[in-house]
Length: 203
Image (cartoon, rainbow, N blue to C red; front, side, top):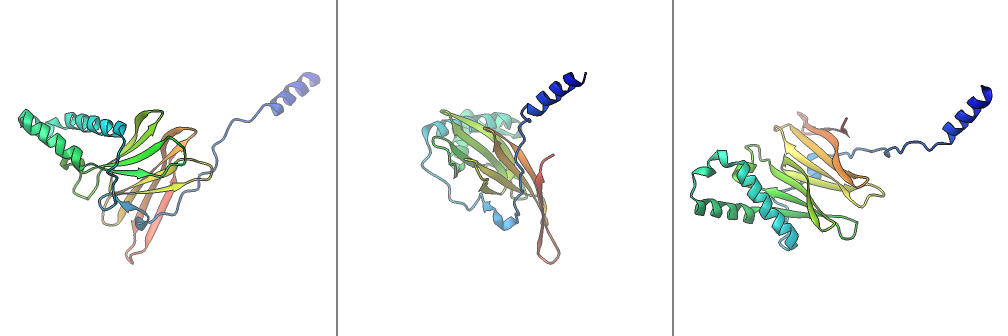
């Protein structure tokens, strides 16, 4: 029995440990860390594959909001409004350190995509392997990016107005080639104007 145990224990010790994710230090963010999606400079030179995706995105978004009154418009009026929505989209290229891949943040400022608090729909989009992939869609007003050591993709944070004193933050990260929500956060403005930040890895 002792010999069997020794052999089993030795094999167990020799087996490789399961891969573990590296520690994820949450950034120290304040509201001034974010670039406003309303005032930031957008890109006008967009690849054709992205232009086609944007047109498809507007069509899908339009069909999802028909109940808000679009159905009462004539076909010509609907076509004109879709054209205006497409023209109003702002696209921000985000930095990527992997050749051939691109990352964009699309600001949809259409009436039905914006709220009373100044948040509009922000869509994180990746161009990779000759295709466009939608990573996430959040209601927000600003964005912030930062690179982690060894990653060719930036972590992307989106800020959302919750109230005059609270900003919610959602962060997305590319982990082993796949994007997912990684950071959950809140930024709170105190009575004296200072800010308290709680940024942590999502459970």
